[in-house]
Length: 322
Image (tube, rainbow, N blue to C red):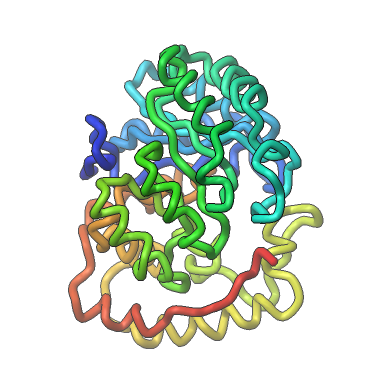
């Protein structure tokens, strides 16, 4: 495993982080706690030292499993979690006042709940789970940040940027109150490269690249006949003719990548790691096999310029979250 500096912090984090949405149980079918624990343990064994979870993942269940894993394995692990919007609506709307989404007392209360779930005294990186720059120059959230930092309950704060809208946190970054951002970045969605990544490099902001495999689309395993359990998140994400669209784009991608070593998923993870602005990539990892294949991608290193040029041509402007 290789490690990268998280922005201007003292931390060296693993290039592959553990995305812990799937182990929360809600919106992802088929996950079992003991299987999740084996995956977490294997990730630690392979050098993963960064986990991204959230209070909203299984109403705290993901955080509880992460806390249990850290205690049982006795590993030094940097944990990032998130404060959900009070109205539980993703993404954020610029017309909604910040006091309806992140009021001061609510930020404090959610952080206390996450500390209890994780069984730790300090959260390394606490994040706002939605954001709009319409809230940037309000005081409520900044006052809560200062309180939690001063009390030692949170080390650093970050923002989980809204789906396919990387420019929605540019002004927040400029305030100096934010240490890291989490953003969708993959072969299909390369939009953070235009404005967000240059600003993060200039301001020494850490970048967590989420959804690197397009919710499974970039594994190459989804076909037009793939069926998801009713109620599972991906049943919505790949609804209608979307599986057909994904298959067409993935087949074109595979043709252009003929001769490039590694699975499509490994190449997709290496694509993210090939940008110098990216600190860590956080694929969802519910199973040991996924942990192992994801970590192999990190050991393979960055992609060469020829391969990156091929992948640049496969950017795809769409939003399946809508």
